Image (tube, rainbow, N blue to C red):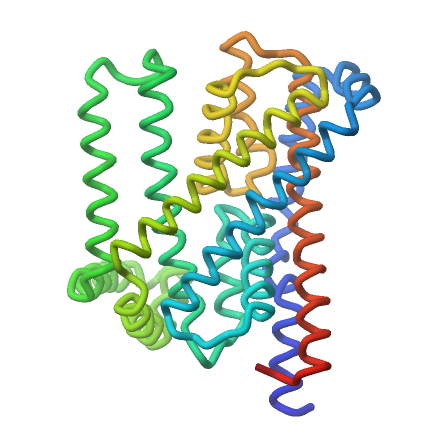
Length: 344
């Protein structure tokens, strides 16, 4: 097989390489099932039988826009700023592949795995993924503080300004690490010393063996950052992220409504924040099970128990199906483009 054919095969089957840990799939699925049993399987079943199809379809459409199309627009901007010279069909395929990888992996690590598996000679994909993750994490932190300080003050310490200051400090440090190469190199050197002291343990030894690859990636990352980072770009990406959140609030409202539940927008905002945090820290693929506990508990303690099982089941199902469907659509479109025009 030619080198080109080998790379295409490797790229086409990246999902096989990142979905191996079946234990976490079983654990997450088991926790999710136990959560549904705790909520009430019978109640969930009857709610699903009487679901309002029109509201469900509107929710699916909003999820497509909020979780797939707007991230694609962000990727178009980032690839343009990074001067990668990619056509929109290629960017669509890249963004959908990375989003699919993040949807089905713990803590969305699949986004980075897919970026490393998909080699792009015209730019550093993993750098853009990291840049986007820092922006999204910063936005999630800000939204967490904003929403809970406005609507759920009882969930915050009495001196919440201390927490707000701490979060803003963390965001500032993250940006300094992202923008300033000297800060990044300093952190890497300190990390190397710590890992060296733990070298006898196999996982740390594996990381140290990848030192040359890590140094190369970091160098490429800061080269990309010089092209990407500007106040205007950050503001535009933040605005698109905010738009995505607003659209997803609408999607959640219609999804709640489709199973006969009336949940106000401020509660939906709280659910979204907790779900987003869960997706970053859950050890199970896509946060299934573990990541569902905080939003469900949050709804319960605020008196919203009606048909919650049906809601989380439909939300999981629609998000997964939309991610898969969007990826298949983009892959089909990209293959047709390659067959008619040749490689970009």
